Amino acid sequence: MQRFRALASARRSIPSLRRALSTTRPSSAHDHELQDEVLVEGKAAARTAILNRPSALNALTTSMGIRLKKLYESWEDNPDIGFVLMKGSGKAFCAGGDVVTLYRLLNEGKVENCKDFFRNLYMFIYVVGTYLKPHVAILDGITMGGGAGVSIPGTFRIATDKTIFATPEVHIGFHPDAGASFYLSNLNGHLGEYLALTGEKLNGVDMLAVGLATNYSMSDRLDWVDERLAKLMTDDPSEIDSTLAQYGDIVYPDKNSIVHRLEAIDKCFGHETVEEILDALETEAARSKQDWCISALKKLKEASPLSLKVSLRSKT
Image (cartoon, rainbow, N blue to C red; front, top):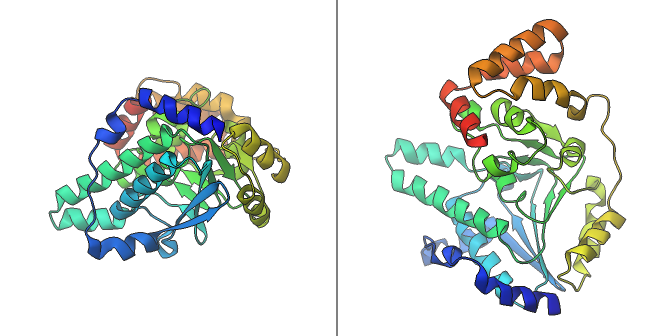
């Protein structure tokens, strides 16, 4: 694989931060749990990481972050592996971080354990964002918060008819994290502010339309996509791209799509303060009576004021 050898050589020019960052290592007692939470499949030149906590919608834990980082780094160093896939088991890709466990840890006074969670998750997202091999994430089902964080920085994101995307952190007193301030900032206009401050859900077609997804496939066709990718012997993104295009589906936004209200979103969310955004939404809701605007206003009023301010600052 000539292309990988060139990338491996270029890898030395990447700052040593990735390798310098220390990772909390699990004890041997956790080895079995680690393997159960992240399953691995290997076919031809591909390796697949399967998030495997279906009863928790594949919510990420500290141990999952540790295992994913270790796997990805070993795959990146292996010249026989051309590209990497990530998918979830059950009805979700990944619902984000395991906030239930974090809440319990905080109540128990285990602050350092919470720090370990964020440290390991963010380090893994850095790995995905700087990965030297093509990365394909199959976003079939719920994809929220940290679930978007571990997928959107990669090369390809396949949305489906079952995809539900959101960054809903302001509604739990937090802010969109796990790289959200970066990828939301790179959306057109002020859509990023809208998604961050309201936690609005997008379907797979809308994800594709606004650039959060790169490809689309009906969920019941994913086995075909998997089968075709498993036969590829390449590390060339263009070959993967053509395969995904060949076996994907062409879709268009419907009349209820977010793309039809981007102009109004820009007008309302293109302000520097939360107070100005609220005023603009009040005016627009009174003028247009549109459901999306009334809903957005309601969501902002229900969210944590501090979370809204932090989210807006981090987005800009």
